Amino acid sequence: MGRIKPLRDELAAVQARIDKLEEKKRKYLGLYEMDEIDRDLFAERLNDLNRELDTELTRRSKLELELRDDQAEPVSYELVRSLVGRFDTLLHRSPFPQRKTLMHLIVKKITLDIRKRVDSVELAFNEETEKHFLSVAPSAEQQSEGAFPLSGKAPTLKNKLTILI
Image 1 (spheres, one colour):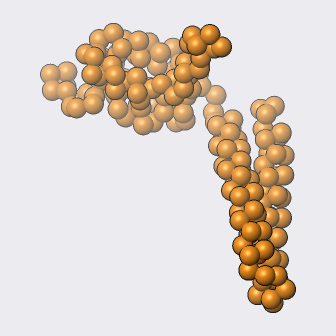
Image 2 (cartoon, rainbow, N blue to C red; image 1 turned 60 degrees about the vertical axis):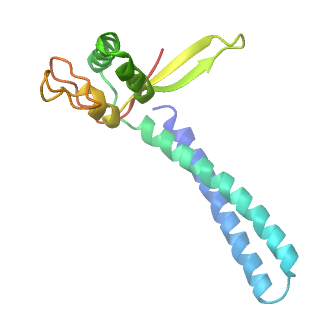
Image 3 (cartoon, rainbow, N blue to C red; image 1 turned 180 degrees about the horizontal axis):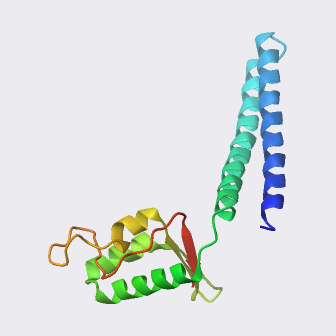
């Protein structure tokens, strides 16, 4: 919760810069339309403004994502324990091709330290991964492609869950 206000403040500052850049673009267009500025200078300045605008728009998108993630409902310990337990079980019971698919679906980021050793692994569980392998397959005998059956009911995820190992 302590991060939300600074993120909102930064988002407001980014939006103010976006508004200013768009206003500058409108002014340059007005000058160009009134023949107050030559074409080359107009094109150069417009390119500069568009580059700055792209940077700010990217920053705004990242901030909006962070805010959306920070406002998500807290995830219970039991849900985390259940997901990690299921992940471990699936990893040990699955044949190699399914293990590979499982890892591709779950591993979000691997960070190395300065000695090029694994520092941390970020796992992401969301509705998409739940659909692929946390649901129980219709039948243990008849496994659909991409399904990873387990006994018991899988927890339902309302938000993305990221685990840092």
